[in-house]
Amino acid sequence: MIISMKLHATRQEIDEVRKQVEHFGYKVHSIEGEERVVIGVVGVGDVTACLESVEAMPQVEKVVRISAPYKFVSKEFRAGRTQIRVNGLAIGGDEFIVMAGPCSVESEKQIMQAAEGVAKAGAKMLRGGAFKPRTSPYDFQGMEVEGLKLLQKAKRATGLAIITEVMSDRDVDLIAEHADVMQVGARNMQNFVLLKALGKCGRPVLLKRGMSSTMKELLMSAEYVVAHGNPDVILCERGIRTFETATRNTCDIAAIPALNELTHLPIILDPSHATGKRSLVPAVARAGVAIGADGLIVEVHPAPEKAISDGAQSLDLIQFEKMMLDLRPYIELWETSRKSEALAAAN
Ligand code: PEP
Ligand code: MN
Image (cartoon, rainbow, N blue to C red; front, side, top):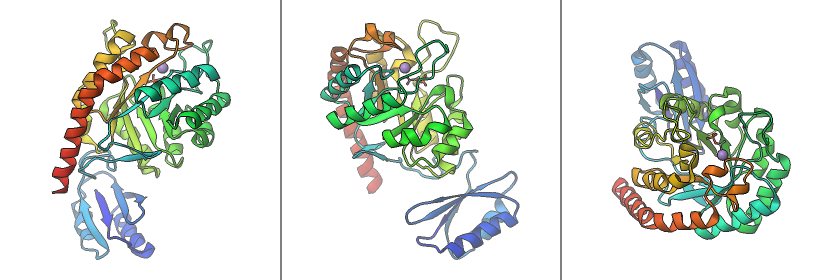
């Protein structure tokens, strides 16, 4: 159940509603917007008596019964799309956003070349891991703080917003100082300590689907971040693990419209990790545009053959430019349909 308070309800009025809910034995989680407070009610059993009682309180605007275990991220909570503002961009709006860059930040020359190349081809955000989750402890673990500084330098040179991975709650403040968007990797999708810390980081979060996670689990993880105070969560489909070995992961392309039915949060597709193979990336990216993703996150390296991580799935700058050109008519169609959707919703 979600309780939406009237605009500018006072602290005392909000506390009265909280107390009433607690009196029925439920827990509350509130989200304080700029104008309005929304209270999520969590608990088991039939909420009807509580709902009817709270509905009668004068300071309450609306009460909505929610069947899903996730509340704030559900479509029942908000029917339209959530737009997430990043550096003058709106993710989930009527512009298709492409994020691109290397798997890892490796050197100043590499990240500057990547940033300039992807910006020229039309990307709006630069990706690059400074803290890397690697399967082997003997593999390159990232340039860490030095990598964050290089990302900042690339941002100053190109104007691209920065998205980079955070692996530990201990690094949240440091990474939030340098990044515009905090990336949570597939391996950390259920790192609940990290998710709670990201609720207070003051930056949008891009949450990647765990490789063996269901959509419901992905939404529950998003709910953690939102319930802890941060409504700006972007979901990312990056392929799941199946019996298939011809591709690195199996791209669950249907997850995009399926998630769109369940949540108002924007959804980005990562065709690079979803396939593991450079030759497959443009076709899967095109599918992402056609099926209604809000954007893409693509691995691009100025010299993929020299990449320290994920070279096999990275496009070079020429291949990325060609992919962007080939995507253009699909993106134009996407943008036209988003604009008419927005018009229809306004009428
Ligand atoms: C990455 O984006 O480089 C990465 C490690 O992705 P994932 O968490 O999806 O494996
Ligand atoms: Mn990678």
